[in-house]
Length: 312
Image 1 (cartoon, rainbow, N blue to C red):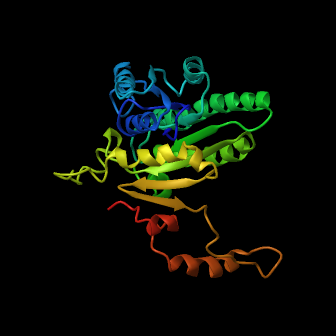
Image 2: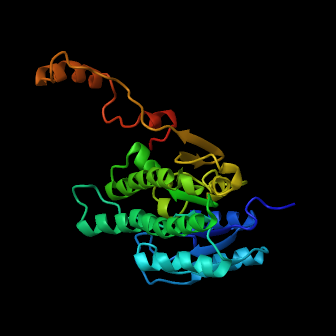
Image 3: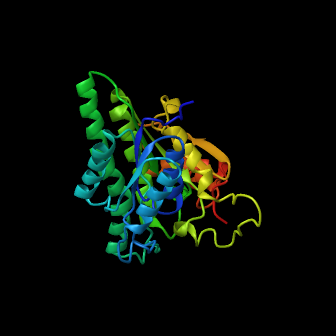
């Protein structure tokens, strides 16, 4: 019996630890050949010396389980290193079919205290890193489609965050990057659909070094799988990368602890029309102020409350 991803080649970025590691192992378990990318810096803020060890260990783990995998230790936020990553997949496996973007760093600070470098570095790794790999992967699929004279197989799974959905006061750089990734995903989904390629984004909740502060007060269970284990997220990535998800495109899904929620695109909550050629200040005050006075202070997306995503 064939595996769901048998014969498909995947790239997973940020795959040396945490979520990326669990996702790379899951794709390998489902039959994909995997390029395990990780820059290998030990600090969750992107600090420290780069190391090949994390990526090489995960690639070895996939091979030890009977799969095929190679390591790539480049920085996906560097345009040319992202090109080399995609080229490595093609050189090793003959093609690229699946791209999972997961690499990221944190440099948390309130917006009034954040430095320019703290802003730029997080946007660079998360948002530019997603763009770089998507750019080269999509060019590969477009060329293959032109040569084939029709659609080819392509899957992109991007990593957004609940920080985008519900807000995160101390992470304006991270929240902005994750919101940008959603926009990149929906744009990519529209652009590549005719080539047979889908692009979707997930908002995962998991206990990793990136979230050690967020879940510091949530103890791991003594027995059984931790509800916040990255292994709860990986199966959804495997599904989105599979032929079964051919009709899933441009979607945002929240996933954690045995739960998957599909997030709708923003809908109009209320509509007001001017009784004149254009609004006056007084008219807007009379219409909008009562509407917002009835809502809780600081409320953002309604979806955040529906999904119970707000942090305590």
